[in-house]
Length: 91
Image 1 (cartoon, rainbow, N blue to C red):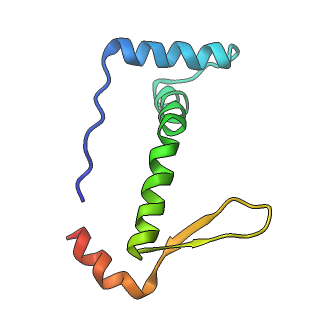
Image 2 (image 1 turned 90 degrees about the vertical axis):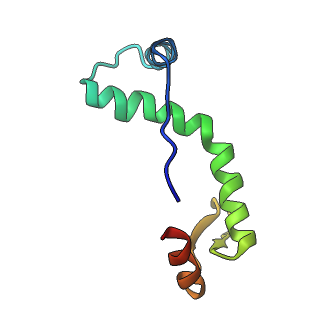
């Protein structure tokens, strides 16, 4: 599995920074903090639906297991019985 690069225009980055600062008007950080906390947080929030959909597809394929407990969010873990198959996918 290769990772596709995420490419944002200067305008996209500026809007994300302004959106974060509008929600957190007292925020102040370094460039690394802006990347890790301000921008990454928004990307994760925006992509949560896709991540959940992907996790559920992986459960359906049998490579992940889904664990549900009362009054708690579902949790996901590797299906140890499929480790050889998973390693094949990773190479």
